[in-house]
Amino acid sequence: MFSLSEENYLKAIFHLQKHSTAGVSTNALAEEMQTKASSVTDMVKKLSDKKLVVYKKYQGVYLSESGRKTALKIIRKHRLWEVFLVEKLDFSWDEVHDVAEELEHIKSEKLISELDKFLDYPKRDPHGDPIPDAKGNFQVANKTLLSDLSTGEKGTLVGVKDTSPEFLKYLDKNKIALGKTIEVLDQEKFDGSMLIQIEKNRLRVSTLVTANIYIKI
Amino acid sequence: MFSLSEENYLKAIFHLQKHSTAGVSTNALAEEMQTKASSVTDMVKKLSDKKLVVYKKYQGVYLSESGRKTALKIIRKHRLWEVFLVEKLDFSWDEVHDVAEELEHIKSEKLISELDKFLDYPKRDPHGDPIPDAKGNFQVANKTLLSDLSTGEKGTLVGVKDTSPEFLKYLDKNKIALGKTIEVLDQEKFDGSMLIQIEKNRLRVSTLVTANIYIKI
DNA sequence: ATTTAAATTTAGACAAACCTAAAAATAATT
DNA sequence: AATTATTTTTAGGTTTGTCTAAATTTAAAT
Ligand SMILES: [Mn+2]
Ligand SMILES: [Mn+2]
Ligand SMILES: [Mn+2]
Ligand SMILES: [Mn+2]
Image (cartoon, rainbow over all chains, first blue to last red; front, top):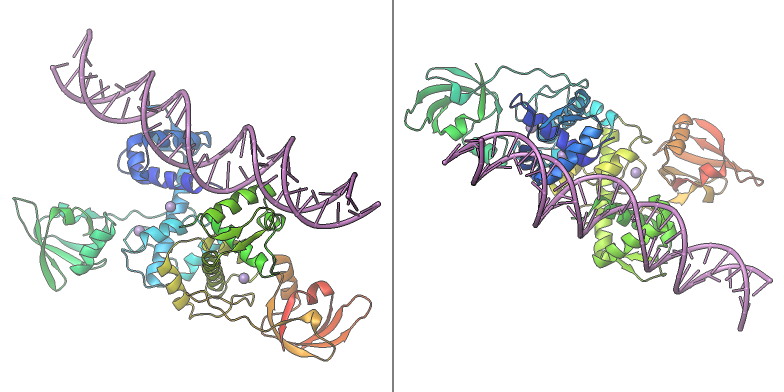
């Protein structure tokens, strides 16, 4: 159906699109795709010819409805494979991304529906991100950044914004994991760092950490 | 490491090489790869530059030791994925090939070693073909074509030569499956067809069938 | 309102993997 | 041994996705 590159672009546009209502800029897309702006322009034209995106010169790019559906299918596959790797093959959550990045492009409807069944229809991936169903529907959890909580507030860790291996390993080291209860004990005015209680542990975390942890109150 | 195309060529050369001691001809490779002879020449030169094959103009191509190792790694992945699809995702043996053809190119050592463990180190794929271990070693079973058996001889069905969905579905329909016991009751001189007893069933099969079933006596 | 800076697009190239058509080498027939 | 047929290679193109460098457009700053 679509090439590996086209699929990766659609996914990238999808992810960049949710941050704002404006079109996705060429440079932002180039940064995300680790390529040059001129390459992005070329590809965006091709996607536009295929009616996957709406594109006006110099005005950024938007996903069309069919582009959005395609992107969601790839994201569904990516996240299901991540669940498989963690649940069945003993990968840790910081090891799955690159492999899923390849697996998401395997073309077989049956493969994905059977995988979904095999995993017992998981709702979220190992990083707390929602897994769209076969039709592309998924629930957006109402979650708050830990950095937006006030002293005394408490909630459950339901996701991470930064999914880099570096951050995830930091969280592992400090026994910070999905599903755990976190309470803000104190916030330092000077640098915004927080003293948090997470289950039995108590530790101080910087804003770089608090701004990348999602809490459900 | 290697491109998808390079990997597929290496695999094709490996499979064609075992049929004879001579080099694999350009035309044979073109047929196997569903491409043109001129394209094969181009690719074979590239593989030769990379020391994956030994190639002399007009003399056919041979796998080098590193080419053979690479081919075996891909075959290992292909067959492990086939086992996964059949054992875990309820695919039938005639549905797995095309998907495995894609999955075999996913690049992750850990993925394959973990998959191997998850599947409990299977020795054969759903078609009875041996699965090389991580070092590329595999046992070649001493098997005979059903067509080479004489009346009265008996054995176990251990593999199929033709793995096309058409043939596999024919076998399913007639309850002919791996592991079953087959006895030759009679052979018709005129067309070579055989009357066989397979467990409770008795049926007559043509040479097209008997020449594609492997038996271990 | 100009000028300067930044973002974006165009122009022209390149590598990978394929193609067709023509040339060259090898194999098969007379 | 000479001729014909087959196989294989070369020459020259195409498409996809990338690149650099130059031109253009939009945004920011005087
Ligand atoms: Mn990808
Ligand atoms: Mn994820
Ligand atoms: Mn393949
Ligand atoms: Mn097989």
